[in-house]
Image (spheres, rainbow, N blue to C red):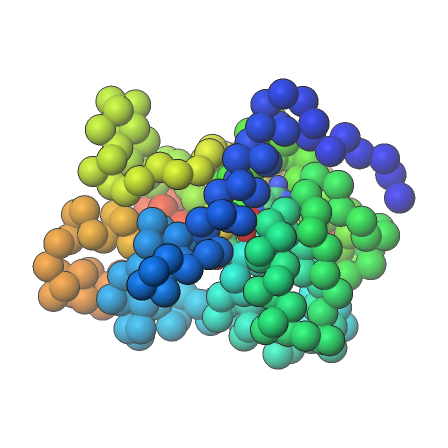
Length: 272
Ligand SMILES: C[S@@+](CC[C@H](N)C(=O)[O-])C[C@H]1O[C@@H](n2cnc3c(N)ncnc32)[C@H](O)[C@@H]1O
């Protein structure tokens, strides 16, 4: 296995430590009301149960359809429905997350079906080409920007030639993200949700660097985050109308939706 730096520079180390600390003390821990931090800060909204959310959660598994064997869940967190759907298609799963609490939750959900590693994605304890597919949702943008390329290369390295890496990320040039980042620049981003974690979003053009030995494709993922929906569409009926429109728009115009939606999936097919 090629030797890799584990991101232990001052910056890389501190981002990983901050992320691990957040998820082990708050993100994956329930409060007095039984609500975990991730839901409270980032993904708690009524539409979760609605048709649109179910569709979003089913997308990663659909992109992995037809691939069997072993799937790597890179940064699975509390193993949301998207991962549970995908796990059903594989004989074996491997869960790799920097958070101890995440690994405990994953063990509770997948038991003997999975192998578990509390580890950084920058230095996975896995052999080259040892998994058939990799799923990594909402993780890369929490890694220090200087180490994001290394993390993606690591996911590609452990996935076999002919296998697929599916990554859900944000497009910082999508209109909603651009507004959010501008508000962040103006230091009024609290309007759009509490910033508990380091985030850095790479533009779509950045992902093209991985196309030298792979086929890289973009797929629309989600039209609005829960925090954006809460801030911009305060009435529930408005959110429902927006999601209905977004579903139809995305089906009819997938390439445009890739550019417009804040959340995008990057599908990387490893060729060699
Ligand atoms: C926003 S949560 C996403 C969880 C899940 N994938 C989902 O879509 O709901 C980010 C997860 O990535 C993990 N993570 C962040 N940086 C990591 C790193 N450098 N190495 C391994 N795991 C990391 C965190 O511990 C956390 O569990």
